[in-house]
Length: 152
Image 1 (tube, one colour):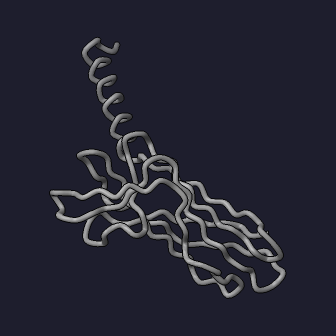
Image 2 (spheres, one colour):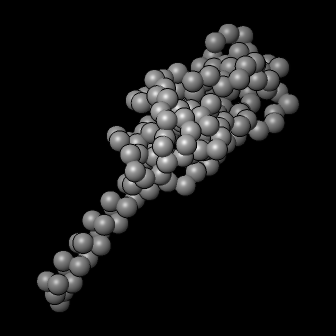
């Protein structure tokens, strides 16, 4: 028979565990490709960021919180046509504690990379996204996410 105190303890651990899991993972990434022309694709790297949290711009101060970095693995069939662009509202804020200005996104953001496939073939683009999530007085360690996007 399960005692009442055991049930209360189990419930408390469950609530604390689920709250910790939510705080630990406030960013969920979505990866996709849109065909823009003959063998030209737009890669979209779209984070879904929980309220009160934010991630940093690629151009945020390198001495502060980790800027978002998108790296494509080498693929002999794929050529990057441009650098990764950012589409979202960037906030520049001077952080007294760090003594520098950081840039982060307020609200939704989409990172876009245009690539060209060199030959008529199905292939995929793989790589990593590295980012850091913070809120008012808390930052999580930088995270590295692998991605794979099919180009057809």
